[in-house]
Image (cartoon, rainbow, N blue to C red; front, side, top):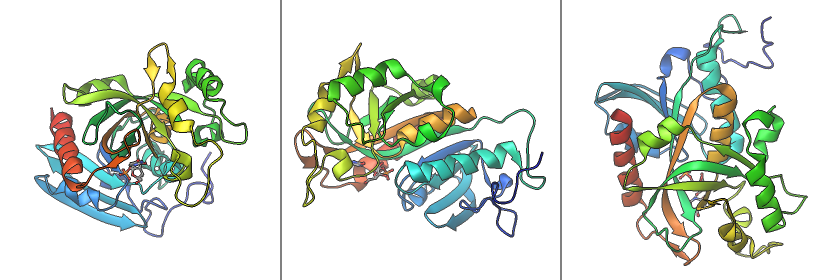
Length: 289
Ligand SMILES: O=P(O)(O)O[C@H]1O[C@H](CO)[C@@H](O)[C@H]1O
Ligand SMILES: O=c1cc[nH]c(=O)[nH]1
C-alpha cells in the first residue's frame, strides 16, 4: 500500500517536505545540533563538504571527516522540531520516496546530538561535557506514538511521586540512549548524565523573569531525585525526543551536551564559543575512531 501524499509530503523536486533533502544527500552518520550556525562550525573541520542545503531552520551539510561520510543538520529548538527531523531522516532511508512505499528491511542511522545545556548540580560546572545515558522528557512527544515498549516507567513513576508532578503537565517519560554510541562518545573528559528535556527555556526550566511559575522549587526537587542511582544532571530541549524516536524507528542515538549554565550557582558561560568548539572537536575525534 502506498502512503498518501498528505502523509508522506514531498517537494516538487522529490525531496522530503521540511528538510528539503533527497535520500542521496544523507550519510548514515548524522550529527544533529540546535543552532543552524553550528553546522558550519562543525563542517569547517571536514576534509570536504559536497552538499549544502537549507530549508527553514534545517541547515544540512554532508561531507567527509577523516574519510568518514557524515551529515550535519540543525534541528532548531525543541522536541516539536525533533518530531519532524527524526521522522523525515528516517523516511529518507526507510521509505522509497519515488514509490511512496515503506522499504523492506530497515536502515539504522547513527545519530549524535552536539548541543548545549544547563547543569542543575553545583558539582557539574560550566564547560563540562555530559554524555546522556538516559533522558527524561517533560515534553509529552512520545505519547503521540505507540511507545510503551521503549519507556522505563519504573523511573518515571518514582520521579512523578518524588516531585509531586502536576497532572496538568505532560507526564514525564524515561528513555535510554544507545549503549554502543554512549561508550564510543564517553571518556575521562565526559560525565555520564541523565538529561531532562523541557518544552521551553524559561518557565519550563524554572527561570523567572516577569511571568511567575507555579512551582519555584521544581529544579531543587529534580536535583534531589535519586532512584536506585539514577539522578538527573542537566536540562535542555531535544534529547528525550531524539532518544524516543530513535528507539521507535530503530536508529542508534547519543546526546552530547556542553554545560553553558549552572542553575545551582546562577552562573552562565562568559564565552559560549570556546566550550562549544571544544565539544565539537572532542565529538568529531570520537566519532572518527
Ligand atoms: O544549543 P542547542 O543545541 O540549541 O541546545 C540547547 O540550546 C537551546 C536553548 O538555548 C535549546 O535548543 C537547548 O536544547
Ligand atoms: O540552561 C540551559 C542552557 C542551554 N540550553 C538549555 O536548554 N538550558
